[in-house]
Amino acid sequence: MTIKVLFVCMGNICRSPTAEGVFRQLVQARGVADRFVIDSAGTHDYHIGESPDKRTMQAARQRGYDLSMLRGRQVGVDDFAAFDHVLAMDQANLANLQRLCPPEQRHKVELFLHYGRSAEQEVPDPYYGGPQGFEHVLDLVEEAANGLLNSLLRD
Image (cartoon, rainbow, N blue to C red; front, side, top):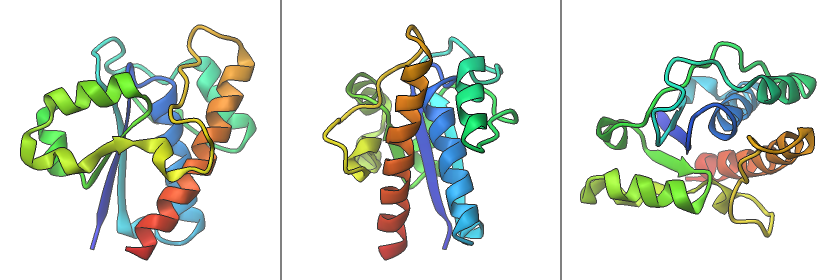
């Protein structure tokens, strides 16, 4: 059985591609990549077709993640049927997803950090900040990605 996971932020150039890249590498390291379909998207169309933000890619590369093959796309109504889990990076994008999502698919939409142990509920947008913001995103994403994978493999 294949488990399909979609990570979602606003523009799909910082947080959600980071989550996609981290989770993708994690399932490969655990030897279960063949059981997953992993993607990311944005709730807005600002960066369709673009690579992740250069600062995102640099921070990820320093931790061994390659995001260079990822390209921005916008989430669509079809994604709710196509994916088993649609994970928002923050409350604003969660609300956007819930408005777009057909009622029968709403059980699939939740906050990504629900799977982490951090007291933080949202992955903050590092776009307008300095390098430390991208490092903090990686810290949160790595923690939640491990929790997510553990949860999905238990089910």
